[in-house]
Image (cartoon, rainbow, N blue to C red; front, side, top):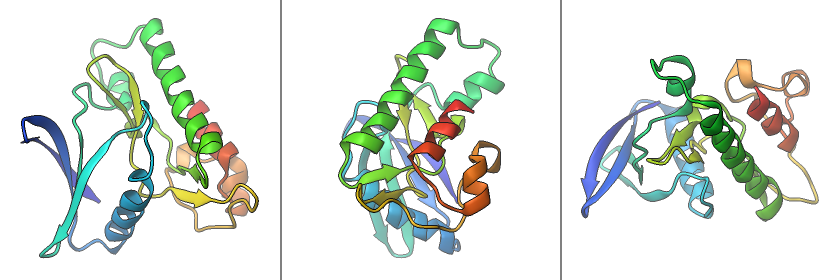
Length: 176
């Protein structure tokens, strides 16, 4: 849905994600991303620094993550992560999910927890990103049935069966 480039903004390393102009789904996810992540602050969530939508351009500006995403270290790296680093990353991601599910009002169901959405800073701290598919949910009501969204291999079986994403389906994805 978009490309990410590294840039310098006011002396700060940033990642700029440009959403494809022709993608209706990309624009929808852009709006969701800005609406949701802009209200969140946690050490294990990628920080959205800013956004811009002008002249048909849709841009998201994030803090730069020098160690890329977890997927590249698990499946493509010549130097795989050791167990202490994996443990640290797992704890960081669990902390992010606890914050989203229990400490936010309304709470957030991410709907796309997967290694490529777990970014790693210079100290290999995990930071969950890509909130384009996320939903805000009232603690009293729960999430209603939605269109399936996310990445198939990481989707919980009950989500595939009934179309209702939940905290539990995020935790299933975390475990995968």
